[in-house]
Image (cartoon, rainbow, N blue to C red; front, side, top):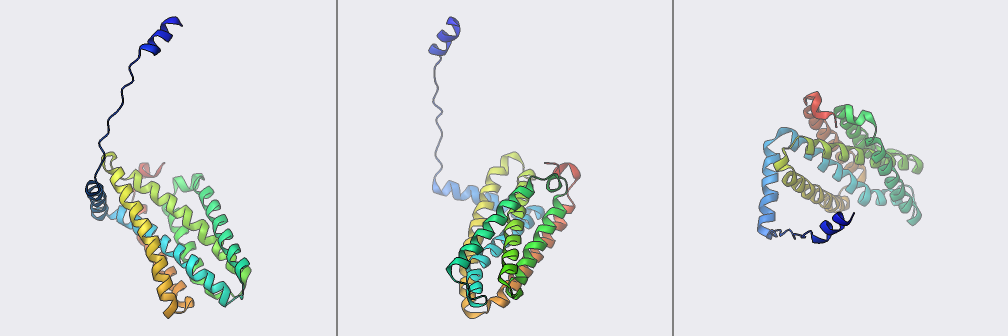
Length: 227
Protein backbone atom coordinates (compact mmCIF):
# COMPACT_ATOMS: atom_id res chain seq x y z
CA UNK A 1 0.00 0.00 0.00
CA UNK A 2 2.88 2.36 0.90
CA UNK A 3 4.55 1.52 -2.41
CA UNK A 4 1.40 2.16 -4.38
CA UNK A 5 0.94 5.51 -2.64
CA UNK A 6 4.53 6.43 -3.39
CA UNK A 7 4.16 5.40 -7.04
CA UNK A 8 0.94 7.35 -7.49
CA UNK A 9 2.50 10.40 -5.92
CA UNK A 10 5.62 10.22 -8.03
CA UNK A 11 3.81 9.60 -11.30
CA UNK A 12 4.37 12.38 -13.81
CA UNK A 13 1.24 13.68 -15.48
CA UNK A 14 1.84 14.31 -19.14
CA UNK A 15 -0.42 16.85 -20.82
CA UNK A 16 -1.32 15.85 -24.33
CA UNK A 17 -0.81 18.64 -26.81
CA UNK A 18 -3.34 18.58 -29.62
CA UNK A 19 -3.10 20.73 -32.68
CA UNK A 20 -6.21 22.75 -33.41
CA UNK A 21 -7.55 22.52 -36.92
CA UNK A 22 -8.17 25.69 -38.86
CA UNK A 23 -11.48 26.42 -40.57
CA UNK A 24 -9.91 25.58 -43.91
CA UNK A 25 -8.64 22.25 -42.63
CA UNK A 26 -12.06 21.39 -41.23
CA UNK A 27 -13.64 22.24 -44.57
CA UNK A 28 -11.12 20.10 -46.43
CA UNK A 29 -11.80 17.17 -44.10
CA UNK A 30 -15.53 17.46 -44.68
CA UNK A 31 -15.13 17.76 -48.45
CA UNK A 32 -12.98 14.64 -48.45
CA UNK A 33 -15.80 12.84 -46.64
CA UNK A 34 -18.32 14.05 -49.22
CA UNK A 35 -16.10 12.89 -52.08
CA UNK A 36 -15.75 9.47 -50.46
CA UNK A 37 -19.55 9.20 -50.13
CA UNK A 38 -20.06 10.27 -53.74
CA UNK A 39 -17.74 7.51 -54.99
CA UNK A 40 -19.52 4.83 -52.93
CA UNK A 41 -22.90 3.70 -54.29
CA UNK A 42 -24.12 2.36 -50.94
CA UNK A 43 -23.16 5.43 -48.95
CA UNK A 44 -24.71 8.05 -51.21
CA UNK A 45 -27.95 6.08 -51.40
CA UNK A 46 -28.06 5.82 -47.62
CA UNK A 47 -27.36 9.53 -47.33
CA UNK A 48 -30.13 10.26 -49.83
CA UNK A 49 -32.56 8.23 -47.73
CA UNK A 50 -31.59 10.20 -44.63
CA UNK A 51 -31.95 13.51 -46.46
CA UNK A 52 -35.38 12.47 -47.73
CA UNK A 53 -36.49 11.75 -44.17
CA UNK A 54 -35.48 15.29 -43.21
CA UNK A 55 -37.74 16.55 -46.00
CA UNK A 56 -40.64 14.75 -44.37
CA UNK A 57 -39.86 16.28 -40.98
CA UNK A 58 -39.79 19.78 -42.47
CA UNK A 59 -43.10 19.20 -44.23
CA UNK A 60 -44.77 18.11 -41.00
CA UNK A 61 -43.46 20.99 -38.91
CA UNK A 62 -44.24 23.75 -41.43
CA UNK A 63 -47.20 22.50 -43.47
CA UNK A 64 -48.68 20.21 -40.84
CA UNK A 65 -49.51 23.12 -38.57
CA UNK A 66 -51.12 24.98 -41.47
CA UNK A 67 -53.07 21.88 -42.43
CA UNK A 68 -54.63 21.27 -39.02
CA UNK A 69 -55.61 24.93 -38.74
CA UNK A 70 -57.20 25.20 -42.17
CA UNK A 71 -58.73 21.75 -42.58
CA UNK A 72 -59.56 20.68 -39.03
CA UNK A 73 -60.07 24.17 -37.59
CA UNK A 74 -57.76 23.34 -34.69
CA UNK A 75 -55.90 26.17 -33.03
CA UNK A 76 -52.88 26.38 -30.71
CA UNK A 77 -53.77 23.32 -28.62
CA UNK A 78 -53.91 21.21 -31.77
CA UNK A 79 -50.45 22.35 -32.83
CA UNK A 80 -49.11 21.30 -29.44
CA UNK A 81 -50.81 17.92 -29.80
CA UNK A 82 -49.29 17.46 -33.26
CA UNK A 83 -45.75 18.13 -32.03
CA UNK A 84 -46.27 15.97 -28.93
CA UNK A 85 -47.48 13.02 -30.99
CA UNK A 86 -44.58 13.50 -33.39
CA UNK A 87 -42.15 13.37 -30.46
CA UNK A 88 -43.86 10.30 -29.00
CA UNK A 89 -43.52 8.55 -32.33
CA UNK A 90 -39.81 9.36 -32.39
CA UNK A 91 -39.39 7.75 -28.97
CA UNK A 92 -41.15 4.60 -30.15
CA UNK A 93 -39.07 4.57 -33.33
CA UNK A 94 -35.89 4.78 -31.27
CA UNK A 95 -37.04 1.83 -29.19
CA UNK A 96 -37.78 -0.18 -32.36
CA UNK A 97 -34.15 0.15 -33.42
CA UNK A 98 -33.12 -1.82 -30.32
CA UNK A 99 -35.07 -4.88 -31.48
CA UNK A 100 -33.13 -7.84 -32.98
CA UNK A 101 -35.14 -7.55 -36.20
CA UNK A 102 -33.59 -4.16 -36.95
CA UNK A 103 -30.11 -5.60 -36.45
CA UNK A 104 -30.51 -8.83 -38.42
CA UNK A 105 -32.67 -7.57 -41.30
CA UNK A 106 -31.65 -3.96 -41.98
CA UNK A 107 -32.83 -3.94 -45.61
CA UNK A 108 -36.48 -4.83 -44.82
CA UNK A 109 -36.34 -2.58 -41.77
CA UNK A 110 -35.23 0.43 -43.82
CA UNK A 111 -37.67 -0.47 -46.62
CA UNK A 112 -40.66 -0.72 -44.28
CA UNK A 113 -39.64 2.50 -42.51
CA UNK A 114 -39.45 4.39 -45.82
CA UNK A 115 -42.80 3.00 -46.97
CA UNK A 116 -44.46 4.01 -43.70
CA UNK A 117 -42.86 7.45 -43.78
CA UNK A 118 -43.75 8.13 -47.39
CA UNK A 119 -47.30 6.80 -47.03
CA UNK A 120 -48.04 8.74 -43.85
CA UNK A 121 -46.86 11.95 -45.53
CA UNK A 122 -48.81 11.34 -48.73
CA UNK A 123 -52.05 10.49 -46.93
CA UNK A 124 -51.89 13.15 -44.23
CA UNK A 125 -53.92 15.86 -46.07
CA UNK A 126 -56.71 13.45 -47.07
CA UNK A 127 -57.57 11.70 -43.81
CA UNK A 128 -60.48 13.98 -42.96
CA UNK A 129 -60.33 13.40 -39.20
CA UNK A 130 -57.97 15.03 -36.74
CA UNK A 131 -57.43 11.82 -34.77
CA UNK A 132 -56.44 9.95 -37.93
CA UNK A 133 -54.10 12.81 -38.78
CA UNK A 134 -52.40 12.39 -35.40
CA UNK A 135 -51.98 8.67 -36.12
CA UNK A 136 -50.26 9.57 -39.39
CA UNK A 137 -47.98 12.01 -37.56
CA UNK A 138 -47.12 9.33 -35.00
CA UNK A 139 -46.15 6.94 -37.81
CA UNK A 140 -44.08 9.71 -39.40
CA UNK A 141 -42.09 10.28 -36.21
CA UNK A 142 -41.56 6.57 -35.50
CA UNK A 143 -40.46 5.65 -39.02
CA UNK A 144 -38.25 8.73 -39.37
CA UNK A 145 -36.14 8.02 -36.28
CA UNK A 146 -35.91 4.27 -36.87
CA UNK A 147 -34.82 4.93 -40.45
CA UNK A 148 -32.21 7.54 -39.52
CA UNK A 149 -30.74 5.34 -36.78
CA UNK A 150 -30.28 2.26 -38.96
CA UNK A 151 -29.01 4.28 -41.93
CA UNK A 152 -26.43 6.03 -39.73
CA UNK A 153 -25.27 2.71 -38.28
CA UNK A 154 -24.93 1.15 -41.73
CA UNK A 155 -22.88 4.10 -42.98
CA UNK A 156 -20.47 3.82 -40.05
CA UNK A 157 -20.14 0.05 -40.48
CA UNK A 158 -19.27 0.27 -44.16
CA UNK A 159 -16.58 2.96 -43.91
CA UNK A 160 -12.91 2.23 -43.07
CA UNK A 161 -11.69 3.39 -39.69
CA UNK A 162 -9.46 6.09 -41.14
CA UNK A 163 -12.37 7.63 -43.09
CA UNK A 164 -15.21 7.18 -40.62
CA UNK A 165 -14.86 10.54 -38.89
CA UNK A 166 -14.77 12.47 -42.15
CA UNK A 167 -17.75 10.60 -43.58
CA UNK A 168 -19.81 11.00 -40.40
CA UNK A 169 -19.02 14.71 -40.31
CA UNK A 170 -20.03 15.13 -43.95
CA UNK A 171 -23.23 13.16 -43.38
CA UNK A 172 -24.17 15.29 -40.37
CA UNK A 173 -23.68 18.46 -42.40
CA UNK A 174 -25.85 17.11 -45.22
CA UNK A 175 -28.60 16.09 -42.79
CA UNK A 176 -28.61 19.52 -41.14
CA UNK A 177 -28.63 21.25 -44.52
CA UNK A 178 -31.45 19.00 -45.75
CA UNK A 179 -33.56 19.79 -42.71
CA UNK A 180 -33.10 23.55 -43.07
CA UNK A 181 -33.64 23.36 -46.83
CA UNK A 182 -36.87 21.44 -46.25
CA UNK A 183 -38.13 24.14 -43.90
CA UNK A 184 -37.36 26.85 -46.46
CA UNK A 185 -38.73 24.89 -49.43
CA UNK A 186 -41.97 23.78 -47.78
CA UNK A 187 -42.56 27.25 -46.40
CA UNK A 188 -41.99 28.92 -49.76
CA UNK A 189 -43.87 26.35 -51.83
CA UNK A 190 -46.69 26.19 -49.31
CA UNK A 191 -47.57 29.78 -50.18
CA UNK A 192 -47.95 29.04 -53.89
CA UNK A 193 -49.00 25.39 -53.86
CA UNK A 194 -51.65 23.70 -51.77
CA UNK A 195 -50.39 21.39 -48.97
CA UNK A 196 -52.66 18.70 -50.40
CA UNK A 197 -50.25 18.55 -53.34
CA UNK A 198 -46.96 19.05 -51.49
CA UNK A 199 -47.50 16.24 -48.98
CA UNK A 200 -47.96 13.54 -51.67
CA UNK A 201 -44.97 15.00 -53.52
CA UNK A 202 -42.81 14.70 -50.40
CA UNK A 203 -44.11 11.19 -49.84
CA UNK A 204 -43.24 10.15 -53.39
CA UNK A 205 -39.70 11.51 -52.99
CA UNK A 206 -39.26 9.57 -49.74
CA UNK A 207 -40.50 6.35 -51.37
CA UNK A 208 -38.14 6.79 -54.33
CA UNK A 209 -35.16 7.32 -52.01
CA UNK A 210 -36.26 4.29 -50.00
CA UNK A 211 -36.22 2.07 -53.07
CA UNK A 212 -32.65 3.10 -53.89
CA UNK A 213 -31.48 2.52 -50.32
CA UNK A 214 -33.25 -0.85 -50.07
CA UNK A 215 -31.63 -2.10 -53.28
CA UNK A 216 -28.15 -1.28 -52.01
CA UNK A 217 -28.62 -2.61 -48.47
CA UNK A 218 -30.04 -5.87 -49.79
CA UNK A 219 -26.77 -6.57 -51.63
CA UNK A 220 -24.68 -6.32 -48.46
CA UNK A 221 -23.05 -9.57 -47.30
CA UNK A 222 -24.52 -11.03 -44.13
CA UNK A 223 -21.51 -10.34 -41.84
CA UNK A 224 -21.75 -6.60 -42.61
CA UNK A 225 -25.20 -6.26 -41.14
CA UNK A 226 -24.82 -8.14 -37.86
CA UNK A 227 -24.29 -5.12 -35.63
